[in-house]
Image 1 (tube, rainbow, N blue to C red):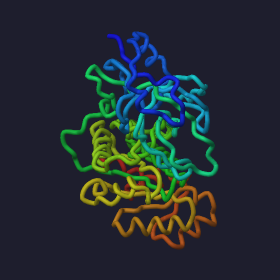
Image 2 (image 1 turned 90 degrees about the horizontal axis):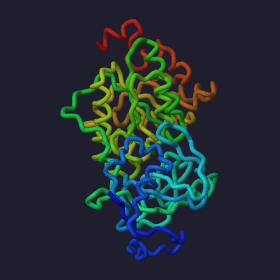
Image 3 (image 1 turned 120 degrees about the vertical axis):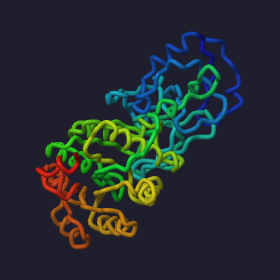
Image 4 (image 1 turned 90 degrees about the vertical axis):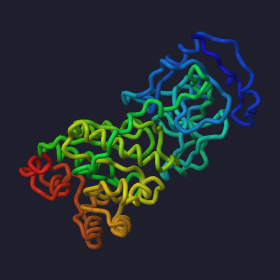
Length: 379
């Protein structure tokens, strides 16, 4: 079937006029080839293109909508991460397949889904299209992109990542041995801590499931979990999110439950789940403040802190919510002095990320038993 396209060519980056988007171009059978030939981003890894019948520039995009866009200026994100993890160099004129979404990254930028289909930015290498509101002083101008059109189906509706999500579980069993890793901020050492725990638990003979519940779509954390020994690893892109920033919290929490239940159904003994960003970030705070739902499933929690003051404040934040904090780790443990400062003010052990990769330490933190007992406890 031929595709139809609403004109996005020759639109200026500034002063975009939505009225231009209503001017139709002739039907072009080659458009499907353009979609299939575009550089495909990581967030599109579950997408199949069989239902694509058109491209449109009519209306306002929604988070998760798939868009074919052209690179008009290469900036901060000069590479696009592909579904298999390869980072493809971008050039002006490249056509890319990405998804709309917000970005919440204090170390990089704040960005929102625009209210039109005019020129915008590539705000994450995993494939997020958005309008940048503010950026960190060290971040260069974002890579500029111009939408060619939203991918649409035969009915003319926009195709969204949610259409490719894992189905919600029929039931929701109470998880046994759900270990959650959180942090005081971005770059506090959460991913390293999660990978270390996965490796240590795997070495003890446990079958470990792993997932990242929130964040911005990117394969780095997922591959880290696989490399550490996870029997199966999933992330929020598996439940229909390009990014969880700004998403409806009910849907974010439902997605978290789906990921955990999916791993449980695959027969793992224990699950290590990472929640992105810091404790003060909207989605992180909400997930950890719902004791009757998600937070009530957590059996043990590990806090990654960037420094000793963050460790103290983070531990207190978790204590006031009656969360089962078992250990503090993260970037602070790179400094013996920083570890001593943190240990002086928290009531749990401060453990280096390297030590968490040891079977004995990992099982003691997560299960409060020794490795020889681990399999009998989870069986």
